[in-house]
Image (cartoon, rainbow, N blue to C red; front, side, top):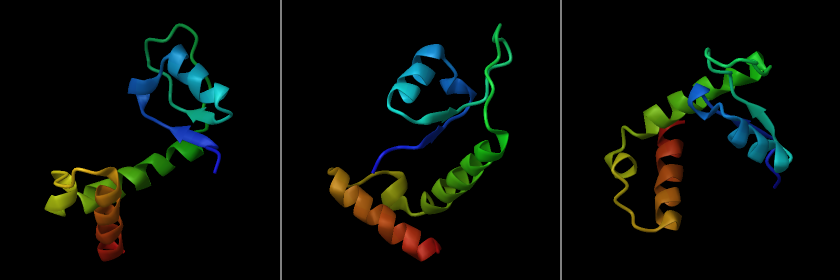
Length: 89
């Protein structure tokens, strides 16, 4: 499944990061830092989706096993993320 959009905060606003994202064929939805000499444009409506993701991670981190990452393997960690997401939903 190809990546279509990468949403990030101002901390990821660098030409190198944006170029890498666009080289993969994805759209970079990252607001420009206030000290940029030439501000880039970005999709403000799509950037609002980042809030949903942040709130979701806040909710599943209430499960200690996910927050502290007890699981050593990525497969097992992802399984507990699924379990936590099901419980939240």
